[in-house]
Image: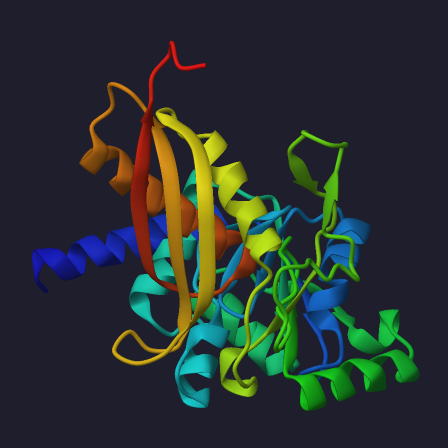
Length: 299
């Protein structure tokens, strides 16, 4: 056995020991019946902070690890991602377990076998309790959710975001009241934990609300020292060499005294991470144009 194999074996043993203390719950129901929509409700009822759903590890309002299975190019890859069969993705989730030491986790799946496979692949203990969609949703509610999935291609992920609509631009359609404002001039805030996410492969051409994406980017930029303001943001679907996903173009004004190259690199990384965490969508390309430099004595 090589040193590399020995190292992996030791790592697996350590992970197994750490994960033994985690209480595992399962939330099971057929695809498209509203599991993700009700995930936070079920988690809260059991006092669970962490949720595993479609390849993502979610804590509260944040995607803390993983890649959405809905990003996979094929159905087979989607299933593999959801089950954490990829060694690198599995290790990423286990590293979060090691650092954060969660006390309990809710795993979402379409069958008892699926949630058990996820638990096994992540070296989690046996599932202690299973909640079924029929325990928390009526037949009419499940049929409505499935009809929306089939006819509109919408998928719910239990983290804050905005809704994307075909041929929709310049106005935030907000049926879930995801974004709210404290009044004119104040930064918007996220108030809901659910989102509707249409898979790219299900939809035709679409545009994304400029207002919605600007809110996400503006909040991200406010956290970055050296950025004075954002002048403009353009978001659109991108196809071709980069694959299907989201293209972002940003124009900004920076503070005097900062290295433009270093600052724009920081902005790219931070904004990409924020948008992907809040929407679970691929940000495939981002361009940033520094339009001006702000001096402290400017009026």
